[in-house]
Image 1: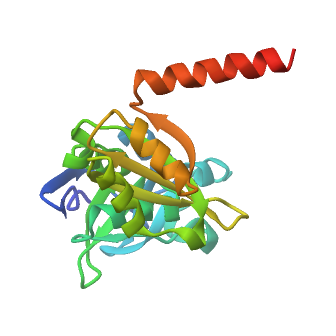
Image 2 (image 1 turned 180 degrees about the vertical axis):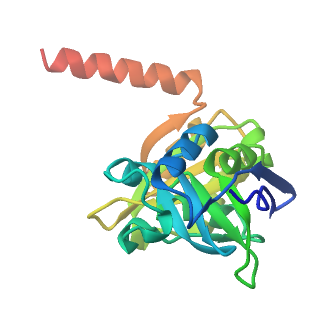
Length: 231
């Protein structure tokens, strides 16, 4: 096995992710590939031929094959999955790529498409979690609105009216609907007034993390009342 490709540095903002992962090669066998993934603790690994990236192999696909000594270069094309990131990709693009390609390891190429190494999803998420927006204390709101009503300026205005700043914001589409979920982290944990303002603007509050005790008590009393009504 060629061990030339063991180390990669990926710049993500001001953070660096480093990881040693040995790729697979076209001359390796299925049995070797399975053992290598188990040894390296991954469910997928890049496949190279003459130093060039061919694609990604997944453990679940290889385990279903009967010929353990078949060379990886002779595998059916549909078992070799596409996917890679560039060495200068931003952390948000990297995280999105893991979701798109549905693997735990991604090959890393330079802008000339030369293989530079590989990176593990766990390490990317660990580094991403060290960013300032995650480390700073604050509360989190999950809001739901029609996608056509999304206005970042309005969300920021509501947060600022409650004397809060937005530390991070993420959007998720709700499948088979015209609605989105907005995950919002603010730099304060007492979200009472901000929640009420969002509700006045027809935002549906789906979840609250870091809420104040008054909100917790209110919800508890409401649940007791609804239970009593339904008796």
